[in-house]
Image 1 (cartoon, rainbow over the protein chains, first blue to last red):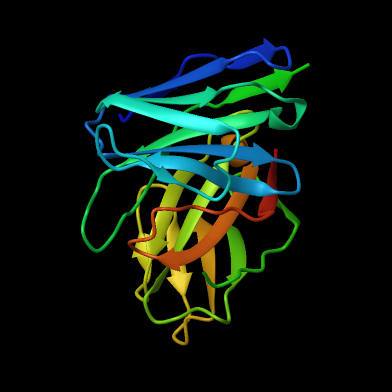
Image 2: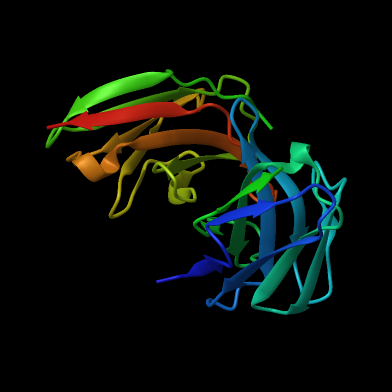
Length: 115
Length: 110
């Protein structure tokens, strides 16, 4: 089975702190994604990466950065956490295939609370 | 991406088939229909996708109308573990991004 793991299920941080969320996948997928999910707003893409050291902005990249030094690991960084970044953060991965991206495999999510 | 319309909620009896409708009347020729679900406090899970032919896998069947303006996800024998929010998404195949709307909350009752 494809496995996508995230470093924490629940995280509480203070305003202004630097926050690292880590994601690891074990299926040799090229694509990795970071989303946030909020009630009433659905799922929104923050950043994605299609290769090591490559990244592309999604719909809401402001206040976030990412790092992909190894193929299996994709990190989301909140440089200075703010209360409006309180959310559920979901990591996903998929194969890079021409013609049909197909399915994305999601991790269990990290519920981040910024006080 | 084409918009989709799903009912807000539906109930289903355990062991019976659950038929989840989705309208996507503005779908274009190169857009696929995808279904995902999200069980409470878990990440979303892929179920199935299709272009114009009906599709079946170990989890579900996807029936797409001939004009492609609507589709139905069928869970053949619903179990309590199928209680989840189900999302119908329409997008081009090479589009990396997933966007979920409100989905249909399905409650399977014993």
